[in-house]
Image (cartoon, rainbow, N blue to C red; front, top):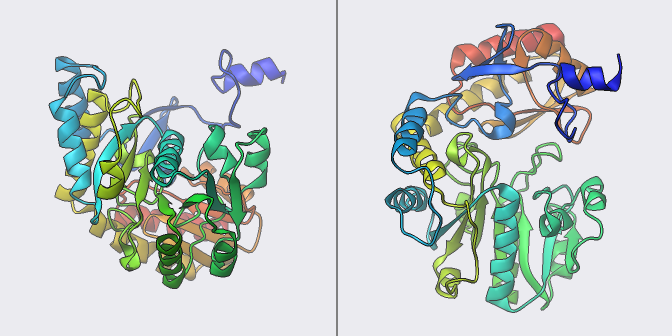
Amino acid sequence: MSRAAQASETGMASELPTYTRWPITLARGEGSTVWDEAGKGYLDLYGGHAVASTGHAHPEVVRAISEQAKTLLFYSNVVGLGIRTRAADAIARHAPAPLSKVFFVNSGTEANENAMRLARRATGRTDVLSFHGGFHGRTADAISAAGLEKYRALGEPNVPGHRLAPFGDLGAADALLDGRVAAVLLEPIQSLAGVLTAAPEYFHGLRRLCDGRGAKLIYDEVQTGFGRTGTFFFAGRHGVVPDLVTLAKGIASGVPMGAVLVSEEIAAGVKPEEYGTTFGGGPLACAAAEATVRVIESEGLLENVRRGSERLRAGLAKLPGVREVRGEGFLLGIVLDRPGKPVREALMARGILVGGSDLPDVLRLLPPLVLREEEIDRFLAAMGEVL
């Protein structure tokens, strides 16, 4: 088959081929299930890469978007919007003190770019320390902070002043964190690198180092935020609260949106016109974000994630070929005794979608927070057959 024919078959004839696409074309979704154009259903344990937090087409989110679209589709940040205020309040009330202010943007990479800029301006310093295995987006500053070499290479020439330390090694961070470092930026759970995290003492140590040397601590919670790990944020876990938190992915259940949560101290130093975005905080996205928070609260999704995660872990531990299960909540990495891609493809043939990672033997589960017990059992049965 010619390249043009392949592109047409996967729906990319007029699109720049930026992704290697799975061999399915989706038409609709509901809850934790999506259907292709032929009507075949797939149990979605990938969630469009951790985006479909409240499930596909949740009625409450759809209703909020529809009602907002009928009244005011868009206006920029030069005016106040009641829906923007309500969305910010809904997010801030779940944040641990002193995180109190929300800056809405459009994506995770934009959130990370602005978080680094906020830290630089607050400290008067230039450099950023991040970690091997981390991924923070594809724009210039964010990709320069990546701890995965192939992404840093894609971003060349990199923004100066980025330093890398081994993740989990407090001594290495100590050696690199000098008076030029404005911020320490990390994913509390490194998703793309194979779902890796660190001991509570490591997070306490980073907080202590930042406090002692005048740097700001930034948690990239683009994936861990909004309930995915069974708490609303990773911030506050182990008693450690960063100065800034970046959010995106599931924040608005699929409507493009990102945000930066900042401490009261940093917020006090921000002046009008220093930061900006045309579409960030638009009414449609804010309506979706407010509805997302409301659904997480009203449907007890944090408890559903915790309960479902335990069921997944227990079931996976019994399967042959599973060496380890990493991560927390509905951000799990399955370490296999064999390459993951054939397993992922065999699951897809059985109507189940899971993700890969940068490690060939690690599959990732990033399902909607509404995933039910019977759906978990269906996945475990299929996984057992494949393995």
